Image (tube, rainbow, N blue to C red; front, top):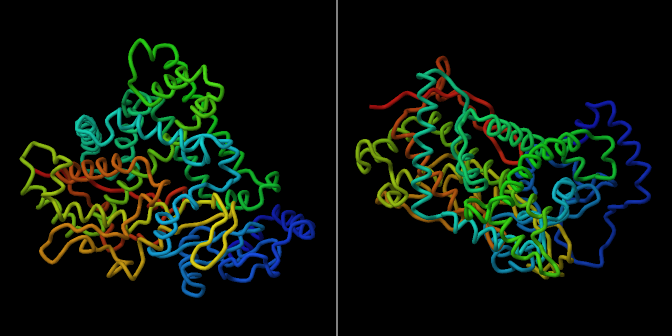
Length: 499
């Protein structure tokens, strides 16, 4: 009874319950017969729907439990809103690949409507989304995404990161220290320059990103999304909007600079490319690259483009602390392939099958981003059901990455999932941390390169161990911190330099 416990733990929310009871006659979820054959699901209660059955902090695990009773496609009621949930590899792939145009839209999630107003790359729809996404992908490629020049930039950043870690001289430091390097790679692409790790603007952005991501995982923010008309009861979404506006102030400064000198200096960044495109399309009757869309697009990449890779790197170090034998085996393999004093190249992953398997297994095991909702763009017939246009659809990536029909030991950290009997790396079709279809992660090639190079470079130089007094067996991975992503709980690590 997670929702009821939450409400009763805060006296002010008694008023919320009363208000909801008053509104029940105006908003009915009911379980009456529908004119459409929606998938089955648990019977909803008035007003709260099925919220009382959900673990509000780990919705992904709740969805997997429902799938055991109702099958891979079922309906849930989040307050007054119906959502169709897809679980398991077959159902998720079927929808996102074979019905990609039908499930291509995003639903109007209240907090993101407040933040982006339908603009940007991630939560926009229709022609605005298509045009902005195409432009963003092309711009990132032009700026080096997936190319050798970016690999050199990442290797340079590894050097800065290693020097900052050496400064701790083997003493414990926070896992979040690893966020600086991958975040800097994204910022360099967005703004045209890397930051010194002590730069005030850089530190401010890191702090704001952290606060925004934590607020996005707040239970009270989920309640705002379920019942936005009762927003005056909640504060978390107001705090979130304030933090986002502080990020926008910084973004506006970079846009002003780009408008002043983009033509003189050439296109050095994604911001420059957006400004140039805006000026190029200025004479068009409908210029989709207006200021609001520019700011929203950069904001999307500032947030999601930094959080995912940076958090995965934290998990990678934590899992190496937890499994020292796996860490040692990775280091031995790198030592056999990479010349002393050099860096592993992205091409070396073909010669480092075990290292590559470990990185893939980290991403599978942590289920970093459990799901991002979709929305039916048209009335859709799917697997014997009729799903009306505009219905929220939740493709559960957690259920795919932990699908027992595709993974031998789904709940164990096992690099063998990606190795054949001869120890060679094998691809697995159910490995979908970047999602599938037309809404898959735009930065997938960048993320893969970053993770491999940062992970290999760090393990070349250091062995990571728990702080004194903590054994590897004491490290608890079972309760991640729920933010926009699933982060590891705040912990410390020690980096022991290797010869």
